[in-house]
Image (cartoon, rainbow, N blue to C red; front, side, top):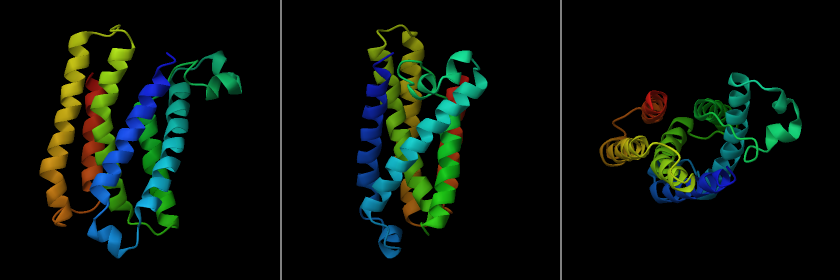
Length: 188
């Protein structure tokens, strides 16, 4: 399970690349002087908060005396267990609190972050399957990859252009994308 940290790092790099590509010439960010540097700083903070919240949610739903040791709690590559839903809920709460304090357009930022999250999900699931040595079901891994990829492509090519024309209220795309991603994870 030591390779799990590599999957997380690869997914985070995909997330950052997607964030850079879709946010660099956004007019709302330019008008409100939200630079790419501020978005990347927020991305690193949310990554740390998301990992912590994912771990807390996993420990709450899978109690064990092992997690009473602080090192076992913090070293998730050696004592595996992260909760996708816990991470998403923790990141959403943190972004709304932090964005409100720093006067960021929270709805727009969360829309872009959720789209970038959807870009990393298919490749993370595929890389996890490859690095785990095929211990998972091949059909389930393939279906997971294609469903997450299809979700990302639909949001990128159908909903992002509508969002950029300001025909969709800010925050709706993030709510819809995260709800669908969690629903797919729950079904799988």
